[in-house]
Image (cartoon, rainbow, N blue to C red; front, side, top):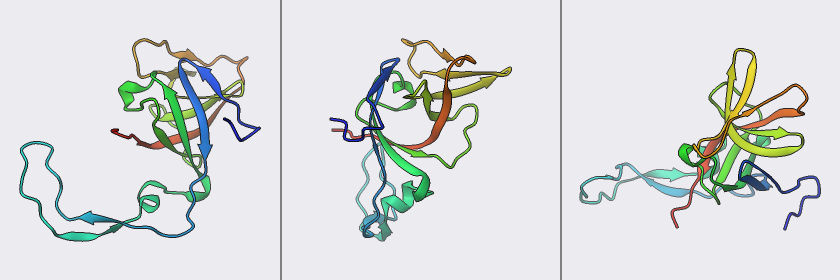
Amino acid sequence: MNKNPKLKKVEIENVVVTNVFKPIRKKEEYIPIFLESVSAGFPSPADDYLEGRLDLNEYLVRNPSATFFLRVTGDSMIDAGIHSGDVLIVDRSLTPRSGSIVIAAIDGELVVKRLKISKNKIYLIPENRKYEPIEIKSEMNFEVWGVVTSVIHSLT
């Protein structure tokens, strides 16, 4: 259920932004990080050399005052590694560029797409061949809301 009356659940091109969250930094919590990388190929013996601790907020959030988390559903961005249920980390202080994955508002509805600027035209490009690009027309109320910096993708 949407608890924010200013944000409505919207759907365009089969991607729905269902929640917007502000990161909370009440206390620092660190997760151990090890010196050795893990092999994605043939297994190697584990090393027990602890490098230090990793604060995921510090690692993933560059500008806390301008950063939000968004949860999405839909499949129009799967080829960019964004799957239904993933949480996006969005920085509103970054300047969007052609090629950036952005959260855009089109007539008040939030969508996630790749931004393409070409020959004075703006397009929002899905990353799934099942969907067509959206050309931004002058009569549309359009705004880039923020730039996606990371995707939190659960494997379970």
